[in-house]
Image (cartoon, rainbow, N blue to C red; front, side, top):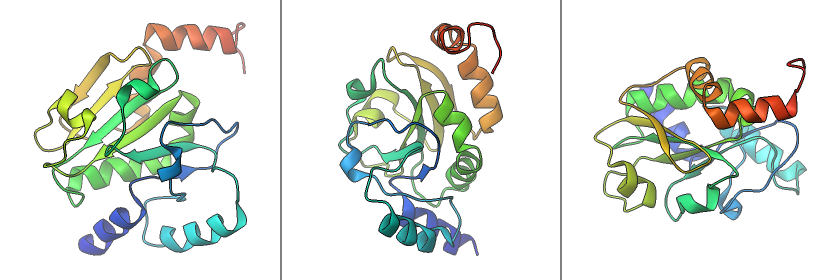
Length: 181
């Protein structure tokens, strides 16, 4: 069972997109693949969804770190870096499943997820963060690494961390000046 789940995740990565309002473009969007969630049935749903949608999918994007330049995201997106030595790492699988379940919350906070599951890759993200095994890092819109963790975190915890960033607080005030929805 674990091997089939890992194979399913590998099949739908490097990118996962979940429907959310207001499409926005990302650097390297030509490499995106749409997927509903990190489950074995997701691949079939993806194939059906791609046939129906000619436009770029809306929502949270999960992108493979290969060929991605961090500078392309500065001042537009927060980066949630999910890194492991192999895509079958249980911590990586758990983190990706949790992200898929609460993707709208991350998209609301201008987050793009960048994954790197090849310890031998020479991606800019791997050079910058130098992970050892599984690692989760949050990089704010200013390009500063705000938090690094050696274990998976729930999206609820990630949202709480992001919501404490000064830039995020400013965004919340601009979007909802009265503090109401």
